Structures are given as structure tokens and as C-alpha cells.
Length: 447
Image 1 (cartoon, rainbow, N blue to C red):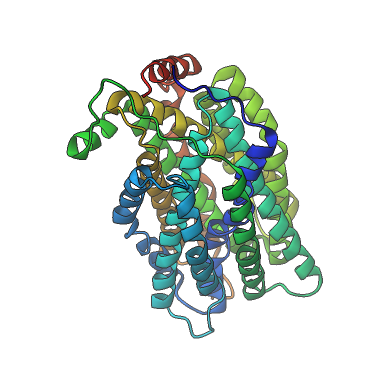
Image 2: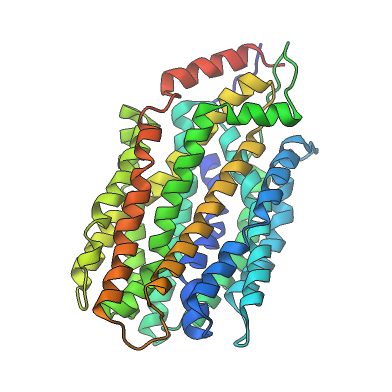
């Protein structure tokens, strides 16, 4: 008989999610702060900054699948996933510090080199971490709760550092450099402590290998992945949603500074958006229980697009209108992340039954590549398109046409890109009933 695992306690789910409190602080500032910092403070060309960040992702094409396969197959006495968190933590700390706290003389090549190491170390840590979470439970709804706990800690981490940045602002420290240094310190101090707690307290389930079935590996295994309709739909949707979100995240600070004219309100605005996202998380979870995770994800994306449509009409001094739109738009952000990860775990069940082997790490490596592609593409589009229309942060003033072009790129382009994901997820093939049927077949054939 297959081993039956009981429901996870809130304590275990919390301990698993704890590293995300500081781990989540790494990528968001890379989009919100780094382009503005290297362009505004270090006087590097905006388009070159965006290109350096996008180019630094090229190594992921080779690193991510290798890391996923290694994480799936390298069995140790401590498990398949946990050792990589221990290895990845010091690398992530080093790269974060070098990108976030550069010398004034840092060049575009410096940004490219250290951001490449940052993304590499993030992969070593993040991919096994997400795969570990996906394997903690085989229940359709409990997977959503595990992912929600993790993303709640991530949102709480954002709230923490944004609150600290607000305090710094009230004390007169408004610069990007000071803000990034504080974020780097939070990561360097907090991450190792939380990783030790998670690794030592949270169990790791053994790999699922099926009886009476030859394992599909190599080229045949790869072809099987891309014949998985649910996987392909999820992958494309992640790229579309992620690109739209990253375009806006890249331009938030520039819009607040050069269009609205209130750059000192950046941290309070993002804090309000994050609090709204965290507060609405239980509502999105409840909705997913009623209509399914895939359709809830679709609604969450459409919700962001709805409020983004009005952004091009924000002008100089429209701080109330702008902040209201950003907070309303952001109230579904956390739900998109946790729903995507929960759906990803269901897609792996489909592959486990087809291939005979649990390849969670490999699948999450492909999703990780998709997310990084979306980040790189979003940063590239969010920097190169405004530059194409004549917008440069170093200029003291811009024409009305240039500003309106910036705001259309900021508001309408992400909405259009995310809308393309609607038909892919609305009729998603893995419902709750389908996932439960998959699990019944898997558990009946476990070794």
C-alpha cells in the first residue's frame, strides 16, 4: 500500500515559507530599484541597463534545466532539495550585495557580470525550494495553502523592507543607494537564519517512482514534457503574465518621479499595494476553491489589466488617482504567484503518471526559465520602448508626446499582453476532479 501523508500543520507550512521572507527581497528590487539606480544615480544609459539585465539571463537557458535534473536525481541522506538551499544561500548573499551596493564607478559590464551570478545563485536556491514545496502535499487545495503561506511571507518581507524605507524617507534618506543597501543587509542577515530553521524542521517527502513502468528519460522524456498540454499552457501564460507585470514594475519609480512628480511616495505606494495584495489573498484562495485555480488565475490577471487601462490618463500631480489605481491593480498580485505555483504542482502529477518518475525539479526549472524570461523581457521592453520614444530619466523635462508614450507603454501594453493568456487558462485541462483522479492512479502504483 502507498504511504499516506497527513495534512500539514500550519506550523510546518509557516516554517517552510519563512525563507521567502528575505529570499523574495532579491528579485523585486532588481526590477523596482536597479534600473532606476544604475540609470539615474550612476548615469548609465537606460537602454544599456535594461539590455545588461536581460542579457544576464542567457545562461539560464543552460543552467536551469541542468539544475532541475540534478535536483531530481541527486539523492543524499538529507534529501534531494534541502542541500541546494544550503549551497545557494552564501552565493545568493554575495551576488545580492555586489549588485545592490556597487561602487560609483560601476559600469554596464559590472552590472551584467554580477547580475548573471545573482540569477545563477537564485536558481540554485529557488528551484529546489519551489519543488520542495510542490512535493509537500498531494492534495489539490492544500497545495494552494502551502504556496499561499510562502507568498504571504514573501509579501510580508516586502512590507518589512518598504516600511524601513519609509522610515528612512522620513529621516531624510530618499536615495536609491541607501535603500538598496538596507535591502541587501536584510537579505544577508535574515536568509541564513530562516534557511536553517526550514531545513532542520520541515520534512522532505521521498521521490515518487511508479511500479511496472519504464522511466522515460533523455530526448523521449523531453518530448513527453512538451506533449503535456497543461504544461505548455501554463508556461506560455507565465511568460505573458510575468512580462506584463515586469514592464509596469520596471517603470513604477520613473513614472512616480517624472510623470506624477512625487518620488518620495514610492515606498509608501508600493507598501500600500503589497498590504492590499496580502489582505486579499484569502479572498482569492476562497474563490479558487469555488471555481478552480485556473479560472481564478485568469480573473486575477484580468483584474490587473482592468485597472491598468486607466493609467495613461494619470498626469502631473495626480497622486491620489495614481496610488488608487496601483493599489486596486496590485490586490491580485500575490494570488497570481501562489496560484501559478499550485497549478504547476498539479501539472507535475500528469507527467509523473506518464513518465513513471517524479520530475518536479525539471519542470520547475522550465517554469523558472519562463519567469526569468518574463523578467528579462519585461525589463527590456520597459526600458527600451520608452527610450525609443525619447524618454531618458537623466533629462530634466520631456515633451507631452514622450510622456504619453511612456504611459501607454506602462498601462496599455501590459494589459494587452496579459489578455493573451485568457483563452489558455480558462479551459485548462487539469481541474480538481482530474487532479484527484491522477493522484489516485499514482498512489495505486507507487513502489
